Length: 170
Ligand code: SF4
Image (cartoon, rainbow, N blue to C red; front, side):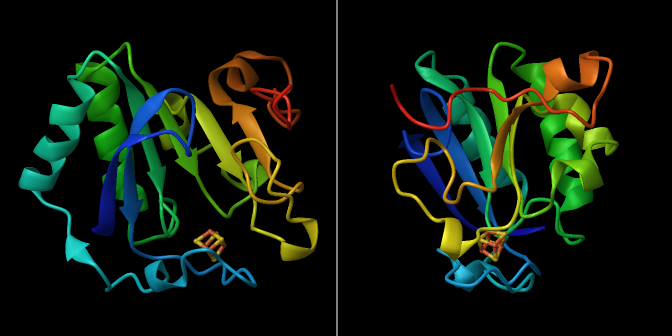
């Protein structure tokens, strides 16, 4: 896996203050993507143990609510195995922290992935510029959904996702 950036004390990509890992690789090619530099899976820098430790050092801080995987697409084939292993390790080491993940895929295509066992909140779907609304909470376009993954998987119909929060700030 390769990555472009780590942002710390981030307030824009999930609840609370978070550390965000921006991975390389995305083949959704959304029109007016906010981050096309991340599309190339060979771009950015290699993700190694030093970088992983940098994430863990952030997660050790009391005021950090958790980690968000973004990009790029953490579910791109270049990333899926490594993100799954990393999310599993974080779930073990930091059980009180939340794990969010942004993907261009739809929930219905991915809900059976092993990775979903470790994710608290998933923001799904491609960015559709015609449905862009800057007032939306945690997402760029109204087709996307902010899904409570564990509540959804515990329910009787995983194809009917439980939404984590209202679309707009009240
Ligand atoms: S899924 Fe995200 S990173 Fe990928 S093209 Fe769409 S907006 Fe850009």
